[in-house]
Length: 118
Image (cartoon, rainbow, N blue to C red; front, top):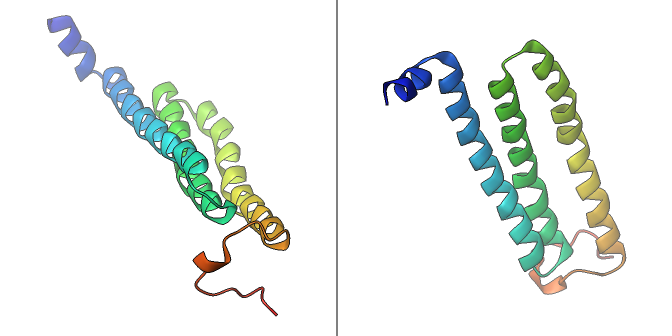
């Protein structure tokens, strides 16, 4: 029992618990995004459920990797992945939303304002 407590007190044990907590939160956010994609009825709402928690979940998972490994190499490997996700997910969701609007694959009555109407 004392060995377990000693391993928790040192830096590696604390970092492992922090990484575990970050991974659990990331998994919960990613699960929420997956449920939203399956349950929501139209593509515009699905995009909202997909983009926001998925990117935050990925950011927390990458932070867990950096905390667990605790080297500068891990940080510099993870940083471009996070930056590309932060830049490319909004662009891709915007393009999917435009394609959904052009193909009339959305519920008109759910929109408060439709800027695409003539």
